[in-house]
Image 1 (cartoon, rainbow, N blue to C red):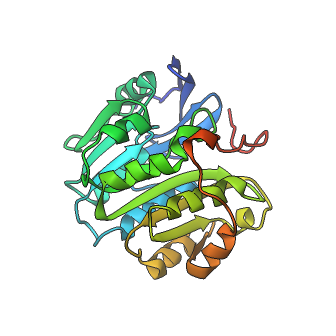
Image 2 (cartoon, rainbow, N blue to C red):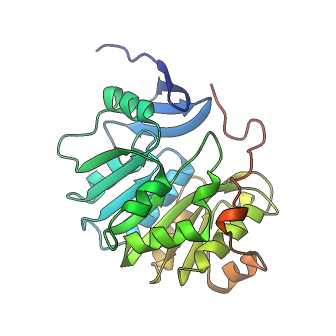
Length: 281
């Protein structure tokens, strides 16, 4: 068998590398400007290597009865890890992937093609602009995993943006976001307060060490108009190699405290990660 070799290429918004995993025969790590973006195992699309990806996967697992096809919008493409996961775990799902970096999409399509029959449409567009023009009530799930470099862009953090995302979701739909922060969690709290202006139900999933302020890390936010299965989500998150806590209800309201929702005119990107927080190779 031909040995897999790394691929490196300048894309529209940085320098991308695809590096084979020596421990898994057809698995690849995607980095952009040294920051890990995605991990894909072409032989096992249900393998989610990154902690935050597993947590997003857990929410997708409990978003509807097992195996039911869903209409899913992915804001941020990377190596299409979660679209591959949904295509396998929920066959027949229709998925839209919105990625601003055309060069990155072309690199992934060339070297890590989607499986035949996957109903995944790729769009080169700004995430907010695409959402603003999307049909109302057209998605069951929106997954927001958008980074400009290693930061979430400011225009994807405001009340106006969240209202547009909610418009695209169906009544029982779920909004998911992967957001980075560290104590005292000014960004994370403000994002929860922003989502609370539109959605009645909020859930936060994060590693205990991050929530205790020990390190910078990712948190997954879940928002909707109907409760998610907290018990099932808690079991799944606790069973991971790096267990996560699931916060909701009164505990989450206490965490939000007096944080204010973000308006467009005051929106800022997520905090800059400290040196070495995510970077590799």
